[in-house]
Image (cartoon, rainbow, N blue to C red; front, top):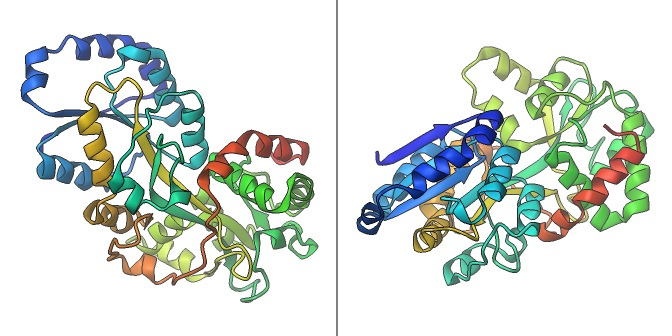
Length: 352
């Protein structure tokens, strides 16, 4: 496997970026001329992506070097390295982070007939700065002993007084929740969204804490009756070999929200070519590879996400068992543009 990998913490990134950049830049120029190379900075931390990267090298012959780290640390590293950065492609999760990266100008526009034909318009930047390669749905899970099918149907229903002290959510500061709030703002307006957020806070069973898995297990443990989570966390527990995880899932039902109107809120994992990419041809090949049917299947089968390419095949019985549903096709760029306003709405509502 012709892949080198390094994982570093945010502190290590901050302390070492200049040294690593110098080392990379001082590598023999002739070696690069003789060997195709791609340098990837990625905030995706899923072990199932190993096969994805290995297959890219096998298919193209391009050596893939990557550095993994937290989104903020990698983002700041790219900005600090500026024109001296060895990075060709940056991959991260959530439209909010992609939007932020695009706004500060770290991406270079990519015009690719392959990408424009395969990635739906609402899952990519209109200017070609970033592309969404996998999709996540923000669904509602509920305790089947307390909630009946049809009791809750929409995100807006979470504000109903019947759910007082029965809702679990993660912090509003997390991009997954900010993007949901932003999408509700685009559809319902800022004032209505703030009213909804205030009622949501009144319905919380506990102060927001933990990640999506914690919300799922909180419902299973009877700490709350309903929670909002990304579907791949739920499917991960479905596929777990641990009896306690299977037992937790057996207690829960799922709702695809807003099926009678706009559809369920979607988010993406994606990336783009960096403005100062030294290996631009390899970068475009990698971005196009991620849109191939084979690569798209890795996202679904490996990490329980949905492909953004319609023709990609899925072989993930657990994910498929959740059934089909109506997706909200709101442009990701519109959701990204509302991130700052969404945080202000959450703050005014007392949602921390």
